[in-house]
Length: 395
Image (cartoon, rainbow, N blue to C red):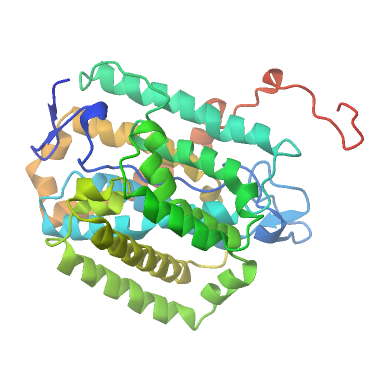
């Protein structure tokens, strides 16, 4: 296939030939939009209070802390994908590296936390199919056709090779299926870290984006092992100033490192030989990145407000913003907007980030959810056999 020219003038190859190009993908939000957290992720509803989100379990109120965290996290995703087109500006380059150091681990830790009670029973496997598997297929087709119609690539649709944003749905499907295994072994996090480190020592190919699935697995398993009291520590008033200092130090550190570190490390998808390092040095780098990411995730969560605000309800629909905002950022790419000179300046970076925040907020809104729920939350009851009650009867 022939290569195409990216927004900053650099050549980017079509999907099958793109091992080391900047990857705009990031992780979506852990829960399926519109569903209530499990019992440990909710708080009792106050008498007479309005429902928190469509589909919330009766008698329970979604914990606003987690919805607030998911809302701010999706803003980072949209902003990060926008900054990817402005990396010739030092300000954008530093912010981009900082965001990518922890925003995927953040999503995945929260995904694991809300997957603690996942089993194959009670229709949960069906929801995995309808809320993860079906959107993966729909958006794999949609983005591939979108690029083809824009003349960017030959028409190539492969469910075995996730395209653009869809990689996380593929990874989430595999992680959820593996959940019962991690819940049965004695040292799940250590085993997951071992698998992740070993996965980068050889070429596993691009099927299912397997390097990223295994490489980011420890963050999912970490989420599975977390308890509510761990988040209570991060919510404490004393943790907030400490977290602010850590985030500031991390931001400063990324600006110092951005010209001395390959950006491909932050995508978690390349084997050591692709990065030009040996297994020993690569393993040390991966361990350092695990530690840095976890510290930044914890620091970010200390800054999340605990009360309800106007944006709290939007946190229940962040998967919509994740899967849909790519059409906006790629439209600007296809139409040449990212080449505008004014964007490639510090004031332009600020304006672009502000616009990204606005787009992310709008795509979490109720009108968007109503219009797109057929693709992201399809019912599809006609596909499944009747559920069996514990006694063996159909229901």
